[in-house]
Length: 162
Image: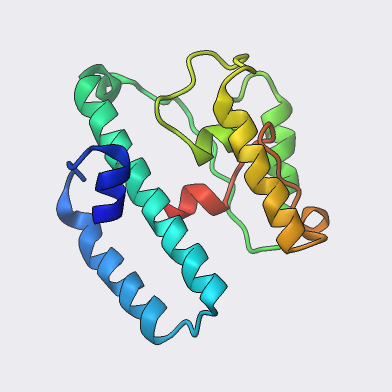
């Protein structure tokens, strides 16, 4: 948490309700996960990143209180076990202009929120794509199992980690 504070310059994590879960995750990572050195590095990096997102989102919401008044009408939820076609269904629904599916770069680096859906010049797009390219280098063939890309809709891993 201290590293996230130092990297963002922010200190308000919002409601404390996330702390017991974070503590349990940290304990389990240390005692149960049997992580390699690389695994420990990656887990730490991901946790710091999620904490940085939390700090940024809490800050953004406090400086934009009207966001709490936004209403999401008729959201769609896709639920299913892994490898059952949920990614395919999500991608198909994301193609419909009547639906708004967040793109991977928007999920990967959510704050500040994207101003317009057609903003293709945001530097976060390239940063996110570089991360996906690194994943492909570390796990060749991952793209054939679960296609990902900065400009593709993202439905599972990052949103459920937050």
